[in-house]
Image (cartoon, rainbow, N blue to C red):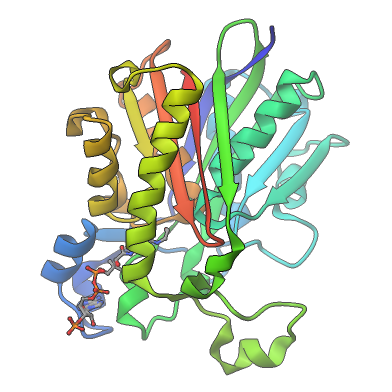
Length: 322
Ligand code: UT7
């Protein structure tokens, strides 16, 4: 049996840091409120001209180096992003060009904060069916570009960054299962209403920015992530105690803690980056994985549960042996 196994991870954050105290000077908020309600103390923001592909390139180069692979060995590129550099080519194609990869399939996945989990699930299918053997899977965002910096209810939450993994065919597990879901009925709770097909007038009237009914999204996120944990354990006949690490999407420390409680996991077994990164959407899970791999917390052979929830709504999980 062929599995898809992560052989290298990489991450990259823009140099520019925006602290809660910086935000206090921009909107009616406070460091105390942001920390208490979200767990966030700072986030990284791309400067003018710094794009999603720039961040993705740095994270990808680090992942390739960690995997001991060169770009020409990659036979599929998938980039999860909600903030592509341009309408087309896809960010995956732009990244392919940057890395000097030619000819293999390359495409973007748009599932907002669940993007990386979706991308990993899709890449797993390519590897298991023999359609690819060395895949670059990236989650990269410049969320700051779609944030309304005058809206205190959203602007304190988000940040920019990129994370990447190299996923290779292996006899050893590997990704054990991926569980992907969506329900478009909840569009009005979390969205950027403007877009290409609706025309640029809406974008110019302010529709280019994120709108969120935070409280309702919060409640849905907590219950839905609880369900996805149960679904993943049940599908694999596992007990909660079989999970070594929870690597959750980093939206809010209170949502992360609720899922950890459901798994009866101590906080030491949960990788948390939200305090320093904010919510980087599709980049949050691979950035957290990379951090925990590089600082030696996550070790080969350990069982990891990744989960995410975001606009769509989309939600999902990936269970894997690292
Ligand atoms: O990535 C996937 C999707 N996103 C999420 O998962 C985010 C989910 N939602 C959340 O994380 C939380 O709902 C928020 C952090 C966005 C908000 O926290 P909350 O505890 O749900 O607060 P709230 O929206 O119920 O607002 C409470 C109060 C309100 O004031 P009143 O009406 O009680 O007077 C808000 O106006 O806090 C006020 N408020 C703020 N105060 C200071 C809202 N934003 C701020 C702010 N600073 N930045």
